[in-house]
Image 1 (cartoon, rainbow, N blue to C red):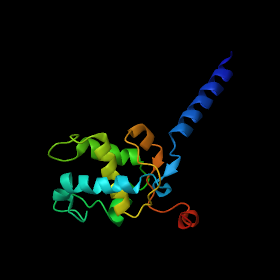
Image 2 (cartoon, rainbow, N blue to C red; image 1 turned 180 degrees about the vertical axis):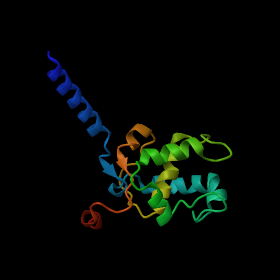
Image 3 (cartoon, rainbow, N blue to C red; image 1 turned 30 degrees about the horizontal axis):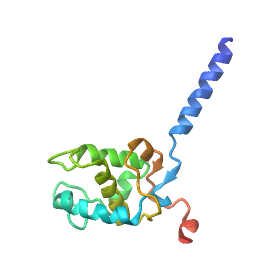
Image 4 (cartoon, rainbow, N blue to C red; image 1 turned 120 degrees about the vertical axis):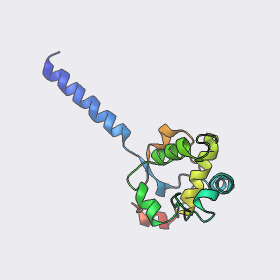
Length: 148
């Protein structure tokens, strides 16, 4: 094998890795279930509302978790980014103290509260899968969502 072939092979491998890392789904694709969001409402009330407000509008130094500012802040990120940030930093007085299922339920409730549609499957609790889901402020396919 010559250097040109090796360089081409390395380039193809890098392109493949980048393609695999790109999100393949969106928050607009029904990535959580209604039941999961209902459980998340209980988790939120027990572990988050005292700082973020019962209506998610934020209180003091805790930011809002619902509304245009929240959606704008995470636009372009992945669901995995949001999940990991919450999982590793919240609740502020005991970060990482909830189960992965509770964090997924809470994120599902946050999505429901921000108007993202529910679907048949529950939001995964594994970051590596959640990194394949794009957090998009605007619905990339509004016509198909209206039919659901």
